[in-house]
Length: 314
Ligand code: PMV
Image (cartoon, rainbow, N blue to C red; front, side, top):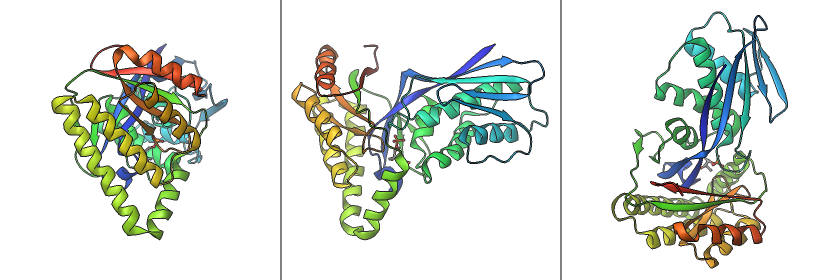
């Protein structure tokens, strides 16, 4: 038996605007992972057991279940590997990552499954090939994904991502600590993305300028992250990004309350992260006040909180 895995992710700047060609900054959350355990099963064929989803999928050549993201993953891996014969393995999936909450659970499960199946087939893909494959599966979950989620998850590195441009990794000048809090409200990203598109079509100038402003914030944030690590500036940029996301109508009462609670408890800044309307928010704090901020967020109704650092362990 062996296993493969992939991390969660969080978007620091630029969600939604990234769909329209603006930059986004995203980082992996390596402590939260999706896993694929691969076990030989002596003649049962390829079986995928999605523990958390309660799904058991026997995969057969030629079967048509393209709406199942797991099945589609297996199909794409088998195609990429040129495998004519399916391996006799059972792949059991599990994940620490809450679903539909902006932490990239779909892309992480896809990546872990693809890695497990590739290993079972004895085939290696380049990181970029795997990234393309996961992107194609993301299209089932998201419709028109920008590609930021699969990229940060497959590379497991902080990224500065611009749709259609070559990928840039980001180096962080100063260690920093973030707190992530889950509203407990599941919110499929595709609906929020579709609503922003409708809004953009109705008011292209106004919404276009909000999107461009989000892009400017992401560019400034990159500078601050890479050169001087100015935490109070980064916090302000996060606050401004949150206000612009409110204008795109993707925040929610609960997200706004948690963002406010984090700021009051001493965070440099806070914003929703991911598709919004629920899911998670993120706050930038000092290593020595993350517990205080987590406590404030829990007191304000956060279902779960996590802390993570860029650069050093918390
Ligand atoms: O999967 P989420 O909820 O983190 O959202 C991804 C970020 C969006 O910009 C909202 C959508 C996209 O495709 O980039």
